[in-house]
Image 1 (spheres, each protein chain N blue to C red):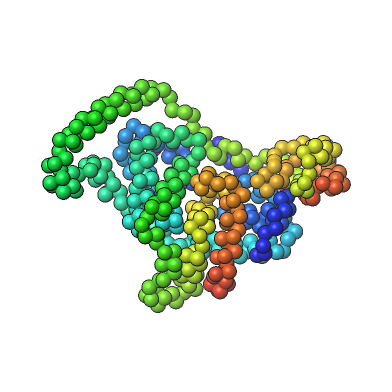
Image 2: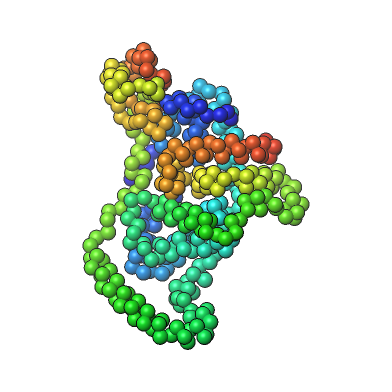
Length: 195
Length: 207
């Protein structure tokens, strides 16, 4: 399939065949194969879960639980979807449950209160953009943040995001539309400065 | 960026919704053609595209999370559930019960190991990469119909154009038709003559 890919568009994810090889090894209890997949996905999953769950220990718990599913139930992954889709979907469900049972649901606004040090360092336009973005992201709902992050940071397509979130493709697009509008409204100045 | 009015089949709205994935390149070929075609004709959407690229850059530039936690997880895997976490008195009191449970667990593990051995010989299901279904279809006309168009009228319009349907509807509700290059202009004219056709554009796949 890659040889017939038109005009050499970059593959969106690490090579699927190589990952499938690692999954097969994990099924055979190969700890080193699991370590490779862990190191590859843990940072991405941590970032994604961090858009849904605020408390750092809970983020770590959800990410480790997700990757333990890979270790214990790699046989459940059929290869019908990408490994990333499978893992992100598990992480999403676990994060939503963790959020619901968390005794102190973290206040989303906490993200907006950045330390003064960050303010002092924010000399560059790009730093201002990042601060503005963090503030603006904190103002979004968790579902909107998740779609923005999956689209622009993880660079996933709308169908894959719909599969991860378990919702229709149209919902992904309209959530993204409203999230974009709110983000741009919240950081109009920063985005205009930063070109 | 205005409010969305839901007009299914409106290329402007479809473009507005698809722009983020057009920016990242994670867009299906038919939808990409739709956006390309509409952008060429819509200054508002071109301005949106520029703003969208800045927003995407800002999100993509956010600091990544460093990898961590493997050592701890590996240690947990090597030595699962240290019993010293439990109060000592509880351990003593519950010792007998735990021993009984352990026996049951061991029995269960034995059964599981036995069961797992059986399917190990059967081959893994064939692995299908998603990319294989995303080949660009060889269409050269993009067409969209009014939202209320019935299936029969849609089929009639395509047949009357003498072009062949090769893809669609895309997520945005567009169809891709194919016809010999020398007949394309005439086919587009025939399509545009149909009242239910809201857009009929020549498209050429990038080489």
